[in-house]
Length: 124
Length: 106
Image 1 (spheres, each protein chain N blue to C red):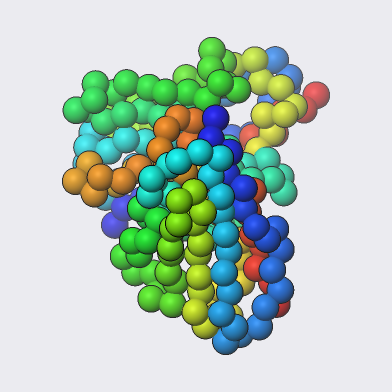
Image 2 (image 1 turned 90 degrees about the horizontal axis):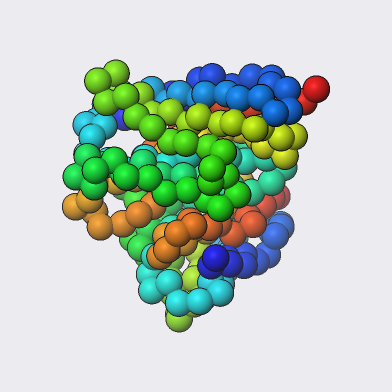
């Protein structure tokens, strides 16, 4: 069974940093691109960044709004995806989700499995 | 960035109704579109990808069509479990972008 479980959210002061984790199980991590999203209270979904699969060299992409502040990384040996967040501001308050893209053979870049989300609150 | 405009923002309907939600892309995205359902406090669930391919396990009352840059999600006969928020998402190019959502309510 495919599972994605985020952790690491919480309360952080403006200007602070936080590292979110996404623990994966039930599939071969290195075969899949993985993305991070967030959803501010009562708002829509915002894409943050991607970690491509091993075949694509684990290369990354970022949204302009977080480029230079957020970094996506992996620990393949422990099946963990990370989102490192720096210089956090109140507008970064949101539920953060990790999501999996399907296997390359599907030839589609939608998101077939999502974690349950972890809440990040940036406030003094 | 590709802008996804979704309509309506709220839709009131009843069990058994046929409903349609529409998404327009600001430029050509071919069929690089997915539809998601989200319930309060839950993660999104993919319903459709490549505009009209039903995700495994999703009931056949859901269908998707495309005409140029206009995409529609149709639910043929609403069931109680279908009352939720629906989003479209384009994956033709970065950044990945979403419609603002349609809240389907009784």
